[in-house]
Image: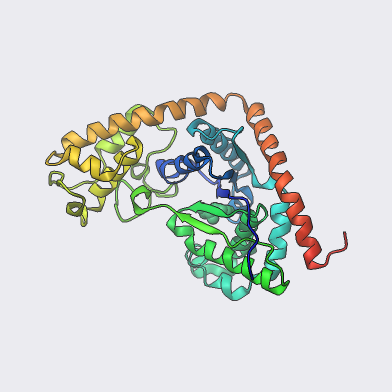
Length: 339
Ligand code: TRP
């Protein structure tokens, strides 16, 4: 089926289900800002609260985390005049198209998702139905805007393939090339931020050790301490990146430095070749404090005015609906609903 041409449009979502880490910032928000600034696409960013509740969330914490995440987006450079920023539950079209996709996607597809298997674990009988259907709602998030590009981490690649499968099956079932076959924009390994305690694990807000991550609201002393105590090895830094191949912790710190400094790991390794971590770590700590403290200061300032954050999210939701409503209407029409 030949695809019509779709407006270049980026959609991405983050779950507001916990504190924000350096991994969220470097792996997601910073790239979202770059895509906003590129001028190549319309950009839509969403706090996916409906996805968050596929596992239990304390209501007050969920509300707080959603607002804090919005503040962090803005502090990190998302401009509500350039991008659409809102929380998912305010635009009912996500859930409405999600239902249609529940009827398009197959049980077998969902059952093969590695994230489902990991999260449901041995106790799948007791997992929520929402957790099982999670990828169909994610497909709806993307396709209700006819988004053409979706920046996500490597761990979401399989969900995006499923989004493409759902779009293709819908188009095929109803004999109309209505939904675009979305392109994933997967972050390179270089921007994947790993745990400070174990270079083979992703930096995560759910890791038991707070020393494994830098939180976006850590103060300068805490950031410096965490970097000073980050796991490394006794060797000095090599003069090329291949020298870091089996040194994942060292590689991670170099990657973090490069991402924060807006340069390449190659440039960083050339600058610090032959130096010990005793030299590199303080330089990294200074850089991290320098880049992150304005963001956390702005985030904290914004959190003093919750009504303003809520107004901004409501305005974002209004703009999102302007795109989503006609696409959902057309979908209902294609499916055969009387309107
Ligand atoms: N599943 C994504 C994650 O866990 C979050 C998400 C939900 C998302 N809907 C999306 C990401 C749509 C991109 C596009 O990170």
